[in-house]
View: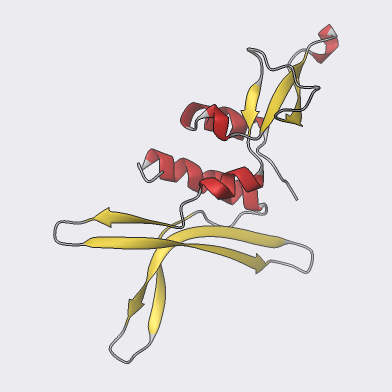
Length: 145
């Protein structure tokens, strides 16, 4: 299972999140010209990490999960609606699980039953971190984070 953002995801998050929220870093391997443009990921604070202008913040799954709000509210013209997080895991096959993150709420019906309605969801992803990444980007782009 993928446990941290890949290089492209890290570059996108670097644009929208504070770098101190990252708990890892992609460092450029430039000791040899044959390694130009090659990166390795290490935990922040590791004695092997020499952060420079070529370093890119990297987020672990745990760091991104901590950034997701449990809920957020939207003010409408006459009322405020609260949307809660819902994290889902589905078995696609015996060997493959799919993950999805949604924000939504329960609708209560006259018969006493209730049903969940997504306001937004990530779609199903094979890696939880990909779903978290997509939701973080959406939340940030929509001023919910």
